[in-house]
Length: 209
Image 1 (tube, one colour):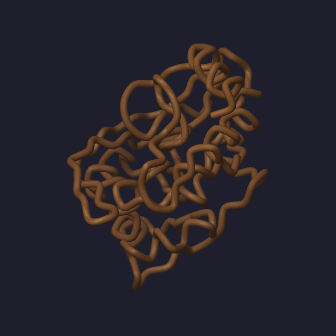
Image 2 (image 1 turned 45 degrees about the vertical axis):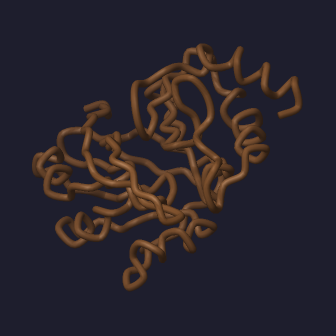
């Protein structure tokens, strides 16, 4: 059976630099009827486990370590036995939320993860966070961008550990090179496509931002 993408929205709080904001997060589940991976275990481990519907969870993949994307990861890992995967450059952020529970394995640029016969390629895309990654699934015609790219532009870079020129470089070098019809499934909000976002992004790049 071919892999499919299931979508869950969970709600909670994003906290950084002394501020707190109410947020809705996209949780993406990629797999078939027997096994799956979760991309960003946000806020509600019980709801995510219920959405798995008894499937074997092979991994909990973190696009980055802002608390709203990882706060439910340890509880989900404990409930399912699945390992938590994170790029090591985001360990300082991870440790702010989970100082007593380290991730189980590292993500690396170019690494390939396979689930239900579908390949997910890790693209290191720093800028929103130092260890931010996107996951390209060419067989599904999609890329999971976390908070690197949204409908309407790049992720926020106004807080600690973020850098606007870096996120623009990441988007230019790692995402705009993907086929324009590639669906962009984001960490918050509605999906878009690479082609829909390219004109505005290329304008920013050409202006030197």
